[in-house]
Image 1 (cartoon, rainbow, N blue to C red):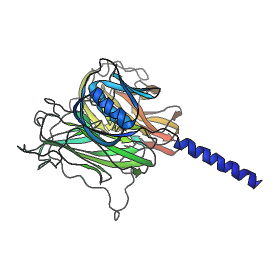
Image 2 (image 1 turned 60 degrees about the vertical axis):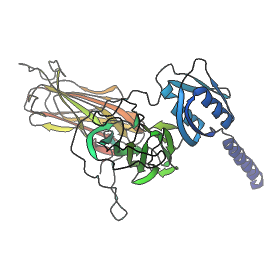
Image 3 (image 1 turned 180 degrees about the horizontal axis):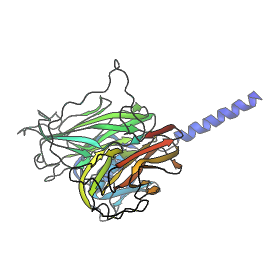
Image 4 (image 1 turned 135 degrees about the horizontal axis):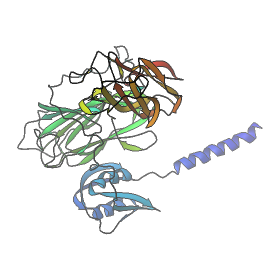
Length: 449
């Protein structure tokens, strides 16, 4: 019996191996052009990759880029969107044609317009624990932290520079602004600039924050469309060093083995001479898919002052109107409030409303139950746009629970609306439990447990 099974098993393994090896991979190419037409670029890439590349009629545009050993698909993803072009496969040919709708790339409108606030010069952030320090365990679930923080600086101008050489310092000299950026995906062409005090040349930016790795595996990072200098650190390790004056270029790290959980990230950028300034941070996932790295905004809370009312009825909806006069907007990392008696001097101690919106990081597939505890007065909760708790009524401190909800691991939309009626109590706590953990106030994800 064993002699009959082994040859069959060997043939099966051989068949699987041959099938995997036969999977087509995009060809790798190199390109170094300046003001080349898209037709010229297509011809060069076609010969180099030994594939058919067809350009549709009435397609125009010029390309300036210098890259080496990059997959053809990735290169097309870089050079086509700024020209409002896209590509697709038709049989065995690449087709380049006009994009009928906005496509991913430098000209895509940002999903969030981050606030711009001058603040004091930031202090040096503490590094991650060294091997001699105890390991810090970070929460793998909860309300997602806000964006990646960008610090922008004005630097001295220089009359001379050399393409291919490191830029002349100093860098990160005169602090101008800080803001939350949902992505590092920018194309500042003259006269565009992140801030009027920066101008369009000789300035620097430093972004730092945390990102969540969904599974153990090999990840590759990219600084795309880089003009001029850039450096990328993951877990305090320099993985891309492209600190030099250069035309728009793409740089790629070696594959890095990362464990599931939170990791630190830092990007340094310097814009040197000339009108072009651009950078895009992307990564390739273990399944081979490539995407622009996104850092979802945190839990945004909007506070409103509402009209007072002479009368109200217990267990009935608040008289309204609600969410009328916006007083402030701020980021919060959890919802566990007992205001005494008001959250802000410009808000009365009664008849005000709050709306929270953000992203919830679910650690594992399974069932989850949500709670609104110590609720006084009205509230309603949505998960992924589904109303799961409706307690929109005047009431003394009360607790409400959702039914069991099946959720997949990953990010989910969350929205909570609250209204405070007559005093003296204004309170609300957002909690949850799961088959994976006991009931808890929903924590801020990525913070120390």
